[in-house]
Image (cartoon, rainbow, N blue to C red):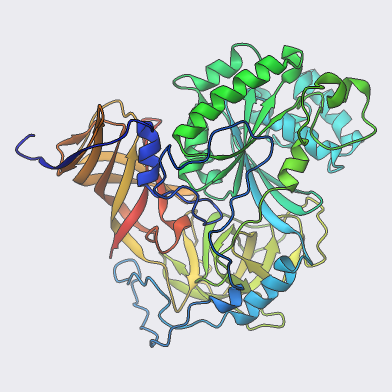
Length: 570
């Protein structure tokens, strides 16, 4: 070892798991539902990567008590909130004062656990460019009745004028003129639809490698990912090779906490619904997904353009009948797979954490609306329950919640109409995509994407430096002390510097070697590092709040590492 390196251990490891698989285990990844999926697993104790036609049930090791019985209680006095929250902030791992959430938790249990309302699922659609993601989901929305025949005919006529007749369904989601002219999705498109048992918030992500930051922002808000691959000869292979987005998107959503994946094999009509081609793609994907510990996976053959196998229909014509086109497939349709997803566990009893993704003013209104996702806790607009008091960080301004608007197109009536901001709700819970109208906030002070709205009594830490565990991919040059990166967190990014290399874990042949204070990180390893930000941002340790403790590092348009926050320096 170099004089700057100290060899801690060089122990033999069974060569029964790939390097990436061990690295994902080291990060102790958990799903977007905040449940353990693959903690400390290896190839020996993982579920066999056998072909699956349904999402595998991930049962909890022990029965879970009602949420109202596991709310953390604390009688410590409330600390004084400092005037400058950017510089003086305390990392409270537990609430400094018990915020009584019993009524909100009881409301959640009555609505969702008792089955009086459908569960909300945040679904992101990812995949390589031209895999047909927007066309696929546009056709799903059309078949569900969210797009009228008249509106679709208008899209078809306008698309044909631009020589893009096959893009009509994609235009349901691709609304900007630049997206339609270029024929690609350029930003996250959000809408909502409903299945028999689920309300689905749909996040349609771009597939071009230039828009990976948008994918990161969308994945940070998702519970489940729908990975679309192109069955056309040569196209699937392009997406899987170096520089293709199939592998990168799958790895990104896994690192950002999405533990359940639906692989949609699209454009099966281009290969005459070949069972051999489907099984070839399935085997290749299973082998890759095993290396990132993505064990909860379902596969579904479809044609997004022709609308085959999207929804369960008994009146479809012969040219769209999956039983006639692919008699070898006996699995569920795409919508049934989504409908049968396992319930997502929500940390409703935890401290309130709302991640800002957008700020805008509706037409005819002078009051800004703050859009985002609740990652922990619950909030009330003051109907039947006290109004929630909040603080916006890192700006440090306090206020209250005046109104809550649903971004899933659902109000207290429960009906999905697909229109956003039209439905007011009394409460919102962890996992919900909502827009908040605040009162008591200085109108001259504006929030930014990545900011966090939280409890006044238990604010999120604001930090300029963290200690983190990294999974290093394959950077084009070695990572050294002082290495500049772009730090992607929540729905935003900030310039940062890797200021210290604390340790690294390498695998050389059959030996796993731990190195203290390595000179550099070459890739395909895990490491503990110190990262310093250009400006203070809101983060929490992964153990405290998983959604606020995950991040990605990118350099020159490439993702070089993903990681979790170990400690936050105030």
